[in-house]
Length: 120
Image 1 (cartoon, helix red, strand yellow):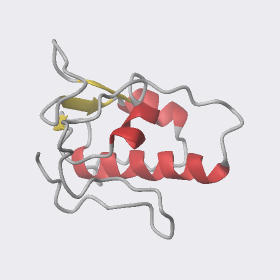
Image 2 (cartoon, rainbow, N blue to C red):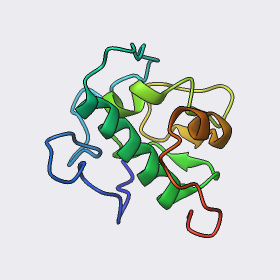
Image 3 (cartoon, rainbow, N blue to C red):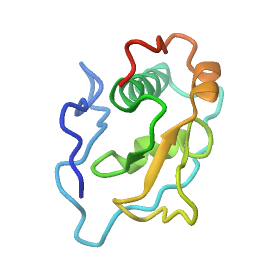
Image 4 (tube, one colour):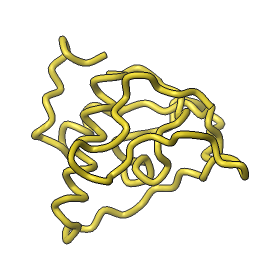
């Protein structure tokens, strides 16, 4: 499992984790698109926004390996802002390639600064 050095471990000041410390003995948890309802807690929305910001700052619009990124946090974005970068895609692989869909991320998270000069 690739460990993304420099990627924040969690949303600052919270317990919302962004990365795993070690690979699961049973293998990677499969990614699946999770519905984000309008009545989600503000803290959950901030965690999604912080995660998208970290993805942008670390990878920009380039494909990246899932590695030690948290499956739960990725699943809130999967299929919308984070999409597979390869076909066929193995949702239960630490080596799976993903990419941030910048247009959808901008629409969903307008408060994140997607300045081209700062990303990756």
